[in-house]
Amino acid sequence: MSGRVWRNWSRIESVTPARVAYPGSPDEVVREIAAARADGLRVKPIGAGHSFTGIAIAPGVQLDLRNLQGVVRVDQARNRVTLAAGTHLYRLPELLAPYGLALQNMGDIDAQTIAGATSTGTHGTGAAFGGLATQITGVTLATADGSLLVVDEEDNADLLDAARLGLGALGVLVDVTVQCVPAFKLHAVEKPEPLAAVLNAWEERATGPDHFEFYWFPHTTTALTKTNTRLPMDAPSAPLGSFKRWLDDDFMSNSLFSAVCGLGKAVPGLIPPINRLAQKLTNNREFTDVSTSVFTTKRDVRFREMEYALPREEVPDVLRALDRLINQNNWKISFPVEVRAAAPDDLWLSTAHGRDTGYVAIHRYYKEDPGLYFTYAEQIFRAHGGRPHWGKMHTQHAESLAASYPRFADFRAVRDKLDPQRVFANDYLDRVLGA
Image 1 (cartoon, rainbow, N blue to C red):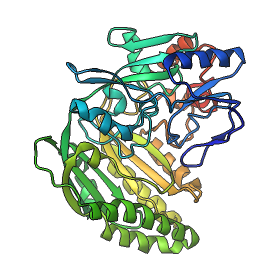
Image 2: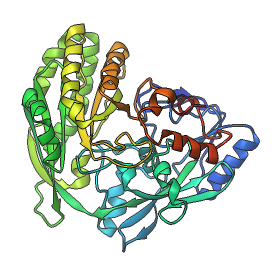
Image 3: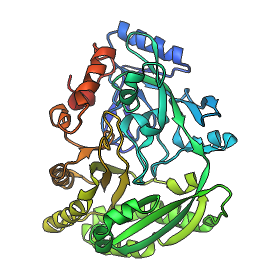
Image 4: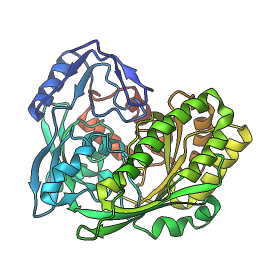
């Protein structure tokens, strides 16, 4: 197939590939790469298109991995499950339930594919828990030379910390092996609290519970906090009722919020009072349910996002600086700021590499220009030692990023070895890794 315009979820990026292929097996992926090379074309796989950057843009051959889904094999002795690369995260509950397993931690969106999520550094929250890539114990890469390369603790182990979070620059992931944990429940407490108090106690709040995060609507002084405590599967459940879940997660957070964002774009002056009303009407509930029903939420309203990983202790100052920035410029910002935490890790291109990490994400409705808001916010993030999320909007390049990652040169050396002719490159990777 050719001539079809592809757009990512946020509608920022688009491309018309020269050819679109739908491989149904690892061997077919290898054959498509070989055919692309013969035609002098570059290759990029796509998943759900949930990256806000051009990381998945494929002007040459676009590999749509929708036919590479499901469980490949299970090592029940070690609680490890190998998943085909195109498996969407929202399918994991049904796929892992027969084995009594779950992911140790998850982000709040489950639309992504497992390969796309690990390749871009998707993460959840919890000061003792790393991002998704830290849960990966092995991968199989279809490489530029036409081979299937197994990378795990036994084979090519020296490449594992590069391949687990590889930006799609080293080859095409055809499967990933995930270190799962016994399925568990979460006790969730969600409530509004004074923003100043949460910031003043940030270190204690971030490190005390198993999982803590909060949202802050600009133009308010309230943090909408979310605290999740891990419980065994035999703990009593107290899930949200179907009406309450529909009211909060479908109507309030999606249908009504979409209408509010549209109204705010038309009449920006209404945004501050709407935000003050929203923080009073939402996020005040307590329930216990299986982990996947608590970690993830439904997100239908399209937006644009920038997220930076910061030294955890810098988060309060960054939030206060964002508040000043918005007020000084009299901007009307309808979307909340999201704040999370994660454990340090050793992955070469992980945004949490080598340090306790706090994440601050800013958003704008997709019909609004993020323009100056993102530009000046990024200056704040960088001034506080921030590293940009690989799948979210930023303006950094290889030279500036190299200073933030001690193993940056090592990753580029692996890329030179596995893809010397840049079969898997595109403009975004040329910018952030160098051509």
